[in-house]
Image (tube, rainbow, N blue to C red; front, side, top):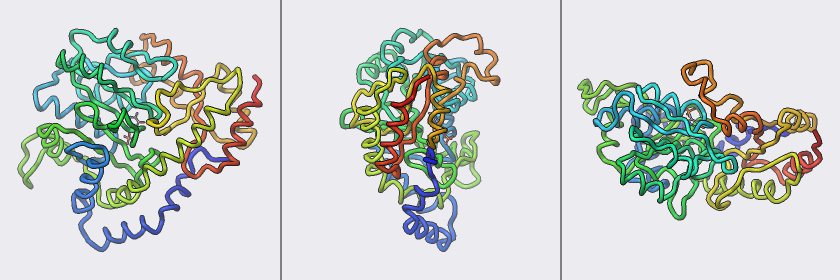
Length: 367
Ligand SMILES: *Cc1c(COP(=O)(O)O)cnc(C)c1O
């Protein structure tokens, strides 16, 4: 079988460096909020191109911390509207509703699978206070034109960069484009830890200072609590492992890109569509999605031929059981994507002959 994402093998390829890093932490005896976390924050901020990086527990927390910090700063209030793509992972929406803000679901563009400027500008209302851009599948969804409109109207731009570590907009990296960005280092992400981990990047010093407190019980001095905070810290072992993997992120992304470019060039089947790529050199292909009206039989055909695939995501957030109040909404494109999307293996260890086999199998599919 060709696995979807062989995490064990991917991490084994860095084993000597990761083991050395973990040993360093074990022997140092300082396990939370120490040198590794500080170094990772500096290195990741330098990589993304922001003044600040604040490590935290996971990607959801990074999103939650950003919205909560804006509340603490008096810039977001109960019931304020936040625009969010209807075809995202549920964490993006939970971070909004768990801060008592209102998600305004927006149908994406059917070709890029991202909210385009047209969709956003058509949905912006007078109560819209923030836009959450999700760089879904590893492709940037920010534009300077959108930023200009938002700046003129005092709307905050937040990036969900969980799937797009290393992606670019021109010469700038995603995660440095809006007012703040959330990053997940869930093991399966392009920059994956050995457990849960996340970070916020921003150029706003007040936002950074607020989040630094919020993630550690609202405290900057031990046992003094300025904010009603939470416990969402990045532990030393995760930070040490992330520092190792960050050094290989660009070359790993390049390998994903090479595979994706073959898929784009060589997949030719009237029953299968691929995502529209705005700029191949800027996309980091966290996920390589196919769209097919015969998705389930296509998945069966690939499984029969030894290829594991996944679906991102089978049920959009507004149709989830936990969001009964949004179940009545109709988001035709997001719903169609849920019914047609199939993700092919696309990772740094995939071999050329495996890519060839995957392409041939997709091309031989007939419903
Ligand atoms: C993975 C992911 C998250 C959540 O990250 P966790 O670290 O699992 O909490 C948020 N948004 C998107 C788009 C994701 O893919």
